[in-house]
Amino acid sequence: MNVVIIGSGIAGLASAVRLAIAGHVVTVYESNAYPGGKLTEINIGEFRFDAGPSLFTLPELVTDLFKLAGKKPSDYFEYEQIEKACNYFYEDGTFFSAYHDKQKFAEELTNKLGITNTKPLFKYLKKSAKKYALTAPLFIEKSLHKLNTFTNLNTLKAISNLGTYQLTKTINDVNESAFKDPRLVQYFNRFATYNGSSPYKAPGMLTMIPHLEHNIGTFFPKGGMIAITNSIYKLALELGVKFVFNSNVKEIKTEGIKNKKVVKGIMLDEGYVPADIILSNADIHPTYTKLLKNEPQPKRLLNQEKSSSALIFYWGINKAFPELDLHNILFSSDYKVEFKHIFSYKSIYYDPTIYINITSKYKTDDAPKGCENWFVMINVPANTTQNWDAHVAQARKQIISKINRILKTKIESHIVAEEILNPVTIESRTSSFGGSLYGNSSNNMHAAFLRHKNFSSSIKGLYFCGGSVHPGGGLPLCLNSAKITTEIINEDYS
Image 1 (cartoon, rainbow, N blue to C red):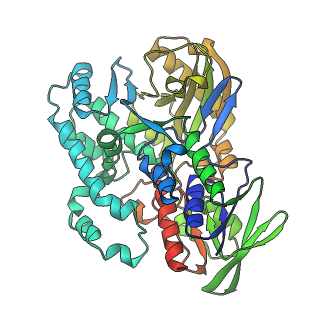
Image 2: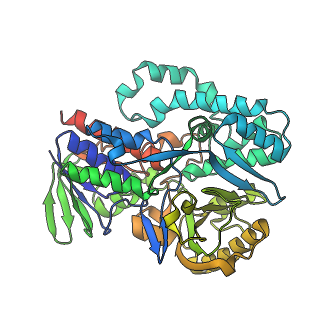
Image 3: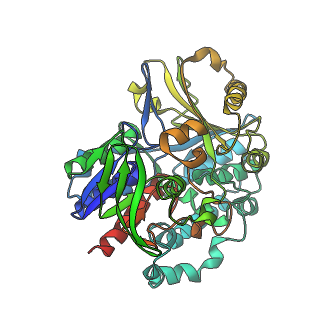
C-alpha cells in the first residue's frame, strides 16, 4: 500500500520503519528541514544542545526497531546506563542524588535527609513496579479502542486488580500516605511532570512512573538524545522510506458520504499527492482543525485541558560545576502553589522548579573544555493569550536568582551563549497545540481513556500516532504509539 505519513516526530519515524518492514511504500512529509519533531538539536557556536526530550528510559523500544529490520542495533545506536537518575536541591540546603540502585538510594536518603526508616521506600517502589506490570500491557502497549484488547488474560488480570491503581486518589495523596518527609513527597510528586500533569490532580495510578527510573534505570545515548532520531532516520532511509522536507501539508483529502468515507490523498503547497493510507503524526488538534476542517470535529477531545508546556534557556556556560550531573532539579519552595499557577492561573510562579540538563557531563564535545552546555527548563502553562515576552524576561531573572542562591554562584556572569524556546516557538516548530508538550493533560482519573484513538472510525485509511493520541506523550509512549498504530494498519490491510 502507498502510505503517507504527516510529520517526522519520533512516532512518525518509528511508524515509517515499521510500515516499510511490513512491505508498504512509505513517504514522510515534514514541514521542517529536519526529522525528529521535538527530538532534535540546537547548536550555538561551540555548544551543542539536545532541544527536546532529555530523559531516556526503556531503550529496548528503540533497539527493537533495528532487530525488527534484521539489523544489529549496535551498528546504529549505542547507549549506557547511568548511576544517578538525577540530583535534587532544596531551598533549605538539602541535596541528594537519586541513584538507580535502590539500596544506595535508601542510604543516600538516610545520609542526606535523615530518614532512618527506609522500608516505606522499598514498599513504594515495589507497588510502583506492580502497577506498571499490571497496567502497561493494557494502557500502554495496546489500543484501548479495539475489542480484542479486552478479551485476553492480561486485561482480565489488570481489571481484577483495580484497587491497586489508586485511581480515586491523586499522586500527592498516595505520596503523602507513603512518606512522612515532605521533601520525599515532593520528590515523588515530580514524576507527574513526565506527562505534563499536576501531582495534585493526576490519578494515583501514575505513581507507576518511578518504576522506570528506580527499578529499570535511566540511560544516555552515545551521541546525545539526537542519536535516537538520527539512528531511526538512517534505518528508515535504508528501508526505502522517502522523506520530503520543507513540505507543508494543507489538507487531508477524503471521498464518500457521511460515515462511509475513505482517504484519497493530501494537498501540499505544490499540489495533490494520492495515498491509500494516511498516518498523521501531527498534533491531533491541528490535524482536525486544519487538515480535516471539513470533517466532524471531536470537540470533547479537542477542548480538554492541555498538558504543561516549557520555557527553556539554552545556555553556554564558561565554567564547570562539579556538584551538577546530567540531570538536576532545583525544587520550588511551594510545589502546590507552583502547579496552581500552571494549571489554574495559566501563569508562571515566581519561584519555579528548575530543571538543568548538562549533556557535556557525558558527551564532552558538547561544550568547549572547562565549559558546560546548560539546558535550563521550567514547566509553564500552554499558550493561550499570555504575554510571553514579559513572562520570559521575568522568569529569566527569577531563574538566575534561584540558581545563584542554591548553587552559591553568579551564573549570569558565566552565560556566554543563549537561545530561548517558549510555548509559542514550540508550537511554531512542532505544531503542538499551544506548545503543550504532551497533548492533553492527565489531570483526571479518566485521562487514559480520553486520548484520541489511533485510527479513525469514520474515515477508512486514516490513522494517528504521536504524543497527542493514545497512549500519550513522552518518548516511550510515542514509540509505543507507533507500534500500536502500525499493528492496526497491518491488521486492517493484511
